[in-house]
Amino acid sequence: MTSLMIQSSTHDYEVILKAGARRELANYIDESYRSILIISDDKVAQFYLEDVVQSLKENHKVHTSIIPSGESSKSMAQYEKLLDDCIDAQLDRKSLIIALGGGMVGDLAGFVASTYLRGIDFIQMPTTILAHDSSVGGKVAINHKKGKNMIGSFYNPVMVIYDTETLSTLSEEEIRSGYGEVIKHALLCDEEWTNELFQLSLPSLTTDQLTSDLTRGIRVKADIVEKDEKEQGLRRHLNLGHTLAHAIEAELGYGKITHGEAVAIGISFTLQLSRSKLTSNLPVIDYVNWMKENKYPVQKLQDLKPELLVERMKWDKKAVQQNIHYVLLTNIGSPCVMPVSEGELKEELKRFFEEVILT
Ligand SMILES: NC(=O)c1ccc[n+]([C@@H]2O[C@H](COP(=O)([O-])OP(=O)(O)OC[C@H]3O[C@@H](n4cnc5c(N)ncnc54)[C@H](O)[C@@H]3O)[C@@H](O)[C@H]2O)c1
Ligand SMILES: O=C(O)C(=O)C[C@@H](O)[C@H](O)[C@H](O)COP(=O)(O)O
Ligand SMILES: [Zn+2]
Figure: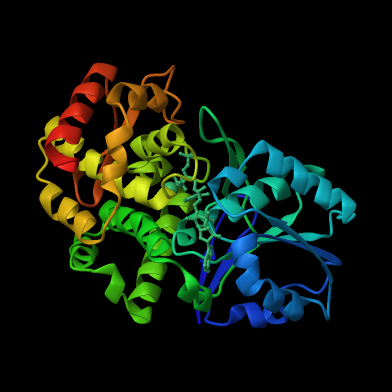
């Protein structure tokens, strides 16, 4: 078992990584919660809901709410439905919400928890690799058709219980997606780790390497969010690759590409942009080869137009009066944020499509 403590302005919380933790929840969850609502999606529920209910029902009154799996459920409609479920279950301020699933469930259930009765406790039980990122740091949100995570808040869980056994049922696509955020964390702080990841072929990923990458990723994230919880400055670095990624996700339609795959593609553009704006010596070719070796779906960009992506980027949360601010890298481990003009972005994106990513 690995345990990490995260500090936040409201409370400190523990992140526990343990194979089989879903069957031992009585060891971790306070008996004083009278009612618990478990929110999950229909795919995750099929695999793991019964174990979680069984491990809680002796000490608590347990309710469940299951939403359709997929990014399109991070919506106003599902948010409203879940609030109805909280009311039907008569949850009060001594009740608890458990988010059992990937980042979609975590973001949505967390946003419900943050607003229902002006905020009740919630626990993140991540079940994807990607959710090593989303379950820590307290960003919770739903999407709007204009852009990702447009409606949300900062609201930290009271605990994160990561049962690493659940990762054994992830599809290849979801493993790839998770590693989009893992490599982001590596690029932000650690050249040696980045080079290690460049050698990684995801089909031969071992449990030991996965657990080590998750723990390292959580440490990187924790270190940043502890210093800048509400994204006043430093935390913007965690948005590496996201200005383009979010534009791709919204432009293709939510769920047409996974978040982490879009992030991986977004990072490749960041590397090119960083090289041309900062004359930095970044390993663009190694990175693109790693993406191609691991089958990141770069061909999905074929249907997208650089001009429309740049229009989407103006809704990025780092933009100031629709002027786009980009997270760039002067080197691996040295991120910075710079304004980039619309014209420059359109030119660079066209070149990126034609000369780097769609060749
Ligand atoms: N709050 C944050 O800081 C933060 C950080 C990164 C990403 N996000 C958000 O997280 C979301 C993406 O998260 P995700 O990639 O986990 O997506 P997800 O929750 O949609 O899960 C991906 C797919 O995997 C399935 N799944 C989940 N766990 C499984 C398991 N153990 N076995 C088999 N199938 C399983 C799900 O049903 C779904 O079909 C996006 O909405 C993104 O914006 C938030
Ligand atoms: O925690 C953060 O801060 C991040 O930026 C992590 C990202 O991986 C994540 O996708 C986040 O939800 C993006 O936030 P947003 O503010 O750009 O919507
Ligand atoms: Zn992300």
